[in-house]
View 1 (cartoon, rainbow, N blue to C red):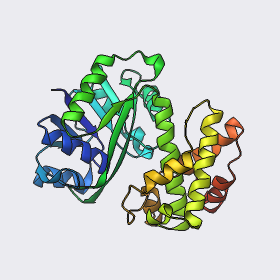
View 2 (cartoon, rainbow, N blue to C red):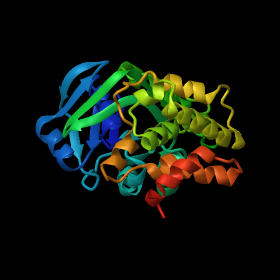
View 3 (cartoon, one colour):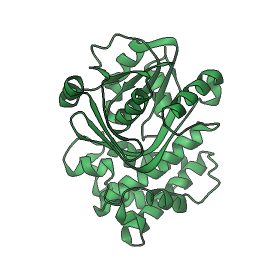
View 4 (cartoon, one colour):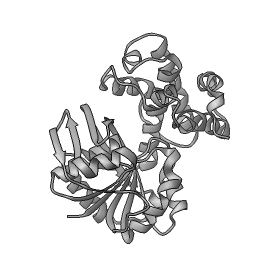
Amino acid sequence: MLKYLIVGTGGVGGTLASCLALDGHNVDCIARGAHLEAIRTHGLSFHSHRMGEHLLRVDAFTAEEYSRKADVIFVCVKGYSLDSVTEVVARASKPETLVIPILNVYGTGPRIARMVPSATVIDGLIYVASYVNAPGEITQSGGIMKLIFGARPEQGVSTELMSRVSEELTAAGIPNEVSTDINRDTFIKWAYISPTNCAGLYHNVTMGGLQFPGEAQDMFRALSCEAQAVGEAMGIEFGMNLADYNVEVARSINPESTASTQKDVAAGRQSEIQGMLFDMVDLGREVGVPTPTYDIVAKRFENLRKL
């Protein structure tokens, strides 16, 4: 079995760590604060709609103290925390290590690769509803879960290693796919999560407000169309109507759940609004595509733009 390191044991990272540990894999976790102490003291508590209730013993560390090597590193932090984890990624990497970012913001793989040029950094994304509900506790709700990862064409990464990772993830109960067009797939995920966060934030609604006709869903659809137009200007072929696709994905999510950026902004915490909102606006301008609905949202939250 491969050795796994989860950098960022939040909702996504904690779910991956739990599934891998349940299948007997050697998995280490990077966490911090009360969450880290709870995992060390009591174990990682996993509440899963798909896999049941479990209390798992996993090795947990701060990024600064971690000194082991891993075969596969999943980077599952928020976009604004990337700078803080590059050193541990570099330290934990061997020449053959595969680094797989699982973030919401488009272009993360190339960004980490520039920051850690010694590592083999591919790209990834996940569709899952999971969150930290208390220190040391991860909840994965609903039946949706799919991990997609792959290398960019110019990288020449071994398909044998990616296939092995895929097989081990499948055995651990993590539905997954090795992408043949990871640039397209990561953009599609961003073009879903960005409209979800922006419409939810603007109208202050849960996922239920996006699932059925109304003002919030109208904005959700309009944002999705603008995101698709930006992607198409970049040469991405969607092969579908993104607005319809996004609404169907949204309907598979617990209607009481709230988008992460929306929760963070409401609580006055650091958020991913730069990547969810302003990066799309800026990219639209760069490729010459108007984004009038995004502009409306951006105007309201301009004070949160990263300078």
